[in-house]
Image (tube, helix red, strand yellow):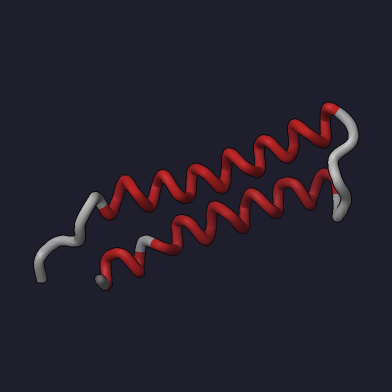
Length: 65
């Protein structure tokens, strides 16, 4: 269980970086232009990378203690 909790940081960091990327380029508003939608897409992909990185390091079940 400890391995799974430690690896949750990759997910949290991915979401934070994704949100920071979007907010730094467009601010707190709904995307309207192609550039803003692109920024949102990059932010979502960064958040997805955090989830994928976590899944890749934890595997399907935690190692036996």
